[in-house]
Image (cartoon, rainbow, N blue to C red; front, side):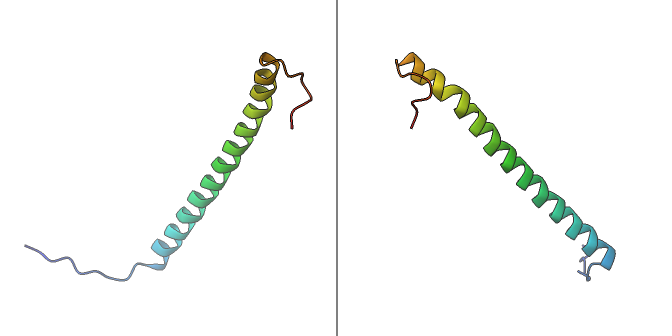
Length: 62
């Protein structure tokens, strides 16, 4: 059985990994922001309708 010897990654490999990690962090940041916006939009639309169905007039939300 052959034993694989670990060697230091090349500068190109290190740069590729750095760019990939940066892109993944950026993607996650954008997805979180989009989820927050979607949640805020959904709440802005749904809660006034729920309040109206309970007899609370629109605009009197706290």
